[in-house]
Length: 509
Ligand SMILES: C[S@@+](CC[C@H](N)C(=O)[O-])C[C@H]1O[C@@H](n2cnc3c(N)ncnc32)[C@H](O)[C@@H]1O
Image (cartoon, rainbow, N blue to C red):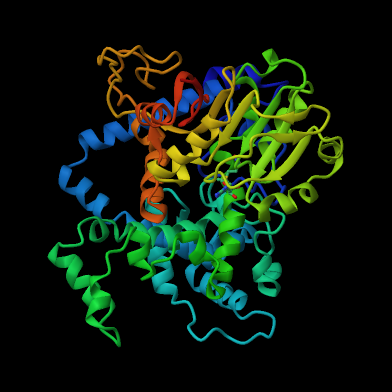
């Protein structure tokens, strides 16, 4: 890291890795001149690789030397951190502290300012004012986990971690228009209400949902239904932990569309935009031999949303044509999302849209401008979709694509690929898939093979998918087996640099 920062320093001002104590307000655009290049450099592949190894080593060291009883206590109570980050965001504390600067704010004054924000446009005091004492204790837990800084006793200030959920809005803007908090931002803060509410409550019910006959699970269902419900309601076998947590038999997306979930639905949509840092779309440009495809080859972007991936690829590879398929409601609004040079791609027909439910059979052919009727495209690209579905549904999706594939059609799956937490030995006599790694750690290093803490977000999301959607993130073995069962043979894999995302190519089998 030091080498990369030293090499990229220009003139007399040395660039340094951003300090934990210094906030970086992405949405407020008031950084010092050296803060921006230093932050940008933190995403450099060499820096990310080094950072991941440091994080993995620190996690492993802490697990090795911390007394197991305290590791147990930390594990059992780590949900408190989720609840505290939720409180931090819901009270707009980060925006209040941004305005206050590095000196910070005493909890008594902070509680008063939080109440002023909650009073809204009409100035009515909130029914339940924030208790400064409780606020101080919540912030001290966060400071203990480096999420904020206690600069003096009971005085708190932002740091680099808390500033990631800053909306860039002034406290006054938030008082007048709280519902516009995420407008015009990178939307990262919008992940907080979604993950700390819907997802957190769902995962808390995982064991009760997976082991419904356990005495505590039976008793929980009785407690949940004790008022005004029949006995039979306590016998409902919920499909997912989410169903039990929210006492609904609806799927998560149908449930989000209930009138009382208007805010949740909005936050979910905005929160999805906030997941961009997980894997930037542009990474896809160099991960597949797009340039080797012949002129006017057709790429079908399955479940392509509004076409964010296709427009990036269409700019990079002008000889290709893209057909973005998604649900009717999505493709209807998709063209209006693009302006400027992107709009030209849509206008010229190089990027086009068509409704297609990917769980349903495809038509014998599709119409593509300039090319005409296409029965088998060159590539089916499916990005960020398979992890939303259980195995049976993914098999159905891939089977429909296989039925429409020609002998040279490629399937390109872009999603998280979970590495095993041990060396991948491929000793089962099957040929190792080119590009599949034995370990994410340097060969022979004592680090956990999946880089442990550095890769944790992928494994956490895996269980979120299970809890909320009955779905999962998959290992390469799981994806290969699933693809094979739908008639596709995985032929190679490429890992995004320093990430749990990967690019998988499969051929008709
Ligand atoms: C996580 S998004 C991924 C979007 C896009 N591929 C990307 O990488 O940004 C999943 C997409 O699947 C779409 N989807 C969900 N159910 C679908 C269905 N039955 N048929 C087609 N698309 C569907 C959603 O509308 C959404 O656009």
